[in-house]
Amino acid sequence: MVEKSWVLIVLMVFIMHGDESLASDPDPIQDFCIPNPKFGYIKTAHLSILPCKNSSEATTDDFVFSGLKSSGNFTDTGLATFPVNPTIFPGINTLGISFVRADLKVGGINPPHFHPRATEIAYVVQGSVYSGFVDSNNRVFSRVIEQGEVMVFPKGLLHFQMNVGEKPSTIFACLNSQNPGLQKIPSAIFGSGIKEELLEKAFGLNHKQIGTMRRRFDPKTVN
Image (cartoon, rainbow, N blue to C red):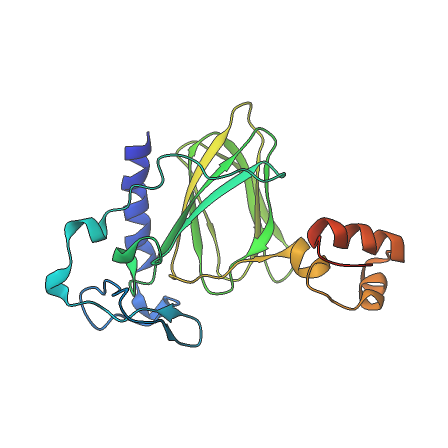
């Protein structure tokens, strides 16, 4: 099953790069760029990149990643994610892509979030996953995605997932940026230090309720 899913992941990459002018990241200026760990990071507006090592030093192993054979660690929402970027998979550096394996326990959720710099294509390897996104008119596009089906989440739009099946589910997702960014809505609102008075007025919550939400999404907050 996993082998079959990778075939689709490869197709996702080609589809997402069918028009490079639409990609979030700049076009590469060489065939590939395997980071050279001997040098420090170069900071850009959105990326922290390593200088390339000489292409003659690249090996096949630089372009193969075997870390997605098992799930990551589960959170209290029943979600385990294993994101893959150039830091742990050198071969995708400067190629404008990243990907992630997500596993959901029965009833588990991937809370509402968005990626400010990438469109995401999610492929359900196994399970039944209620998936969807909300557009800028607050219209919800959602349905249950079954094994073998794919859903796309447009760049910058809030999206979510929930395992509604009777067995654990696994999802592979590809994003058209090596640094897509991740903004979780609950944490951004209640865990970022926004002034309490504003939150009370915006959500109709009192001081005690705001404190409860802050403790849940930002344990370091002192009320």
